[in-house]
Length: 288
Length: 310
Image 1 (cartoon, rainbow over the protein chains, first blue to last red):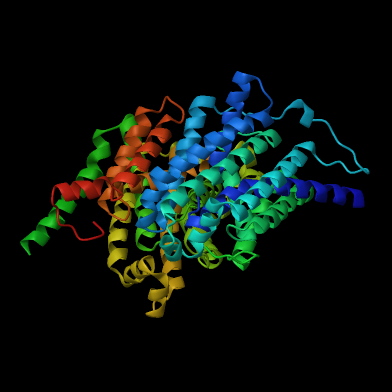
Image 2: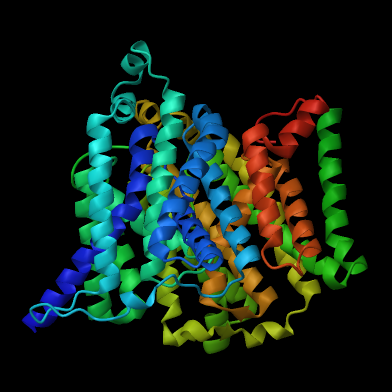
């Protein structure tokens, strides 16, 4: 019994790392420009399909695809911000919701048209074996996601702390007027922030594709789970994202164990709803 | 005064035309008319909520699904007459909205939107594994086979026309004033003595009740219910598209929007996903270039001087 619980806990933790990474793009956009990107999950799935295409043409490992997918997603994010969100930002809070929602539908149906509704997966054979350490069996797929998440998070942490652009990204939401006074153009910072957000989403998307099967319409599931992570962790907070991710990961794994796979997602959504209701500002503060 | 009489005359002529229309057109055109009217009804109230009360619900599909399932279950399992089950389904949807408004309306802005989306997904997943209503196999609505499209047209017409008058009335009512205040600035409205929760909850319940009725009538039209399609987010997507294409928060906008939407759907029906893709692109273009929608552009070009909700 203890063994089962320990196993579930470890897998929830590992899965949580992957979800923290997935949610981070949503968190950046929400924290820096106060936009919730409803198309967030669809961008992740788009990245997974991109990796699938690259894998087929170049016959390389899905992990290597990240090196190609991530820059592409950076460009997509930059253009997405430059030509859509920046244009509707001044027009009220509901406008970006409508735009990203419409974008989500466009991406889903584009993927449906190009790749059909078949189930796809990026899982390579070496992730299907089982690991056994001290009679614990962490899932290799989750473990890969977790390790990658830690690497990417460390890189982002250094970027925010050490580089000018990273500091500018933190400065703009903190005090837009003051940032403007010292010569930071908020639109440009937004463009790069969206680029960074989608770059991370791209990496997360490929890792998700390696961990789970995906369909053109899988995106909304991930945006809801990511939103749960963001709500739990507070906006734009690295530490918060990690903790939020762990809670969601545990909720998914234990929900699946206790209530079966049918009710796994439902249980997780209910957890998010309850937390949303009790603490709309998140567990680690941070208000939208 | 003469102008006022003319207005009523126009409305009467249009209504009379719509009442007799299905006697002349049949087949798929009548199906299209039913769809247009149903979409119109739901999109009118969705647009009103989004624009004037500032509450963007992404979970209206929950009410479409509940309406459909409630009607089917009542009429098939309990032998309730068809139209009585539609009415009861509507009340159930309204009741569900009233219960949900307590936790959901505590959330503001995007939190509310995501909250409604989550609730709708929870309800979908629940129906997906609820054996009583056929779970993932779906439910064949056998008693609906006996309802012809000619008969079905009239409840759809009632819903469509009613939604137009409802939005017009709501906009000018005391509730509408309160809602517009909330849409502008919720804290300011609250400090001026608007009971913000009551206003938003009433609006949400009324809109959801109407949406449930749309779902109920639609299920009779479709004669088959499946959790994935009955609770699909694409319902709300469609309402959003219709409202945005025509012009969010106007009365004429969704009329244009729903006609375009259904026409596009029929034209591109043989290509899976193409019509939604195209509509998504149109909606994006409209949002980015002229967010007031087609009706906004038309009324500006024709220099029509219309008062707001029109």
